[in-house]
Image 1 (cartoon, rainbow, N blue to C red):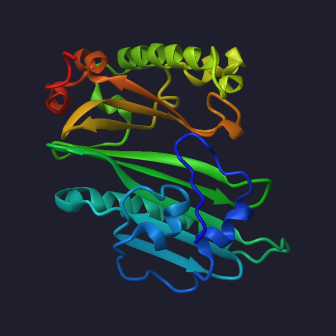
Image 2 (cartoon, one colour; image 1 turned 45 degrees about the horizontal axis):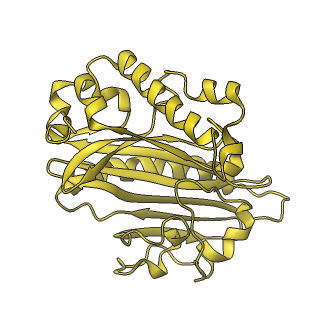
Image 3 (cartoon, rainbow, N blue to C red; image 1 turned 120 degrees about the vertical axis):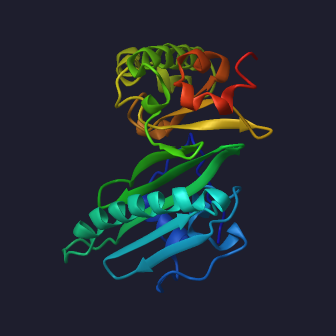
Length: 268
């Protein structure tokens, strides 16, 4: 498989150009677990990260899909069913359109890649990334986050805070500060020149701050990573943008039940 990498920032161009890379020869249902990421159809999204534990994939003349699930270890009993239910909902919605006969010559595609992005004592964060192609110039990327903290599931960042509205105001300020710096210089400064677009995409609304995972170092949470999908704060070509908010900023806002993973870092 030829290398083709999408990180958090670049976005795919033409979904049709990914067909051979992601699904070539992919005509059988879920294969056995793999130990190397080299043969994963999700390599195109994250080739450098650990290999998926389970790959559910299928191909027909009308559509192709691949869903990669992570190896969760001790977090599996609590988090694995949640990931499977969510992925199956995405697949069902995709198949409701993709399985219908149509005159178009192209094959519809769905890719869902779920990977652990942070892990430590009492917490694990999984980011689901991928794209859906059902016609047009390119596939539409999408993201979802799943955080398991001391046994309870957090899928919306607002659930972490004692006062969600107050916390979003702080997150908005942090995001705008980061994007202002990016707009001031660098190869991607052009992405952030539309101030009206940027302000709308970073406004402190639940929709704008719906995706976040923990960041970690040495088994302890260091902060929160916010995700801004294409079109939210910048053009599609600029891809998904991320903003890291350190634990010292978050800690005073956190609900008591969610402070433990951040305690050792909050004063730094």
